[in-house]
Amino acid sequence: MDLHPKVIDLTLDRVSLLLKYLGNPQLSLPPVIHIAGTNGKGSTQAMIRAGLEATGKLVHAYTSPHLAKFHERIRIAGKLITEEALTQQLDTCYEANNGQNITYFEITTCAAMRAFSQVSADYTILEVGLGGRLDATNVVNKPAACIITPIDLDHQQFLGDTIAKIAYEKAGILKQGVTAIIGPQHDEAREIIEKQAAKVGATLLIHGQDWHVDVEAGNLIYQDENGRLDLPLPSLPGPHQIENAGAAIATLRCLKMNKINCTGAVTDAIWPARMERLQTGSLVDTLPHNDIWLDGGHNPAAGRAIAATLESLPKRDTHIICGMINTKEVEGFLKPISKHCKSLTALSIPDVPNAISEIELMEVGNGFGLTCFQGKNINQILKNLSELYPGSRILICGSLYLAGHVLRENKNTY
Image (tube, rainbow, N blue to C red):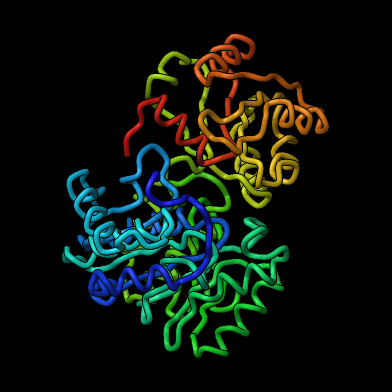
């Protein structure tokens, strides 16, 4: 992080040049599944990986950001990259780059691709970091499949201030002759995706047209031209995971996988800090009478998904601990959640320079009629809420940076 700026500067020039110096490892990857979108990318890739691994397939996976430690971003044939392997790959990339300008995300993406190219596997899942068209992962010319999960407003300062503009950037991963699975979209996003697909010659499988997913009698029902599947509900909580599961199953069917793979996708996926109930750890072990939940969502669409999940859970007073960064739409995120909560405790995320202050968060919470508190230390905040509201549900939300801080404090490993 000292050597390379953690800035966002969307272009493919620097990463393409470094990959060339490294011998173009992106040309030697196992078949690639490329995922873009605003919300649901991580959950969808986790389900696809679980589905492929259900029949013993080996899967590389690249995702961002990490929560507790950087190694979470790179899975080599199903296992987190080791400290030794990561160090070796980064050293090689530093040497090859020879001091030229490059960003944190670009050089670590090159390290991941080089690591993937050196170990045999059946598939590689690449999750876009930001956007798609100019994202550092968009260097694979012929992926096995592409996926675009739901698109909404986020990162407007980099991708554009309308859903149509953002959709154009996301649709930049579409490739000639490659099938793309399209999750539920706003009309304007779908129109842009369809236009781009026609331009490059990509085939689309669109939610609501080519594939359908719903819940009937406690089961997930998926249907496409190949028939109907009756499956268990997703292990990942929240109504929004039904649609993410649908996209994962559509992808697996596109790759000619069977019902065992599709069942594994919904039952075996693990994706931390996405409406995750923390079961053990140094934080939660001291609060036996409270349910502690954690979610890293941070935009209005994530707020709506969290609200829908809270509505689906058993009735219980809910109190939220929230920390966010100043590039996010705080009111849009908190408004839907506030209808399901009794109080908000504002926390400025530790060691994050652009974290929003407790006062600003409290002002928004007060505007929605919530009882508001402020705190500095997550351990003390949890203790205070537990004493004030015994037996309640406590949800920590607003940022993946905050989620990572909580997981480190709770000593979680994945």
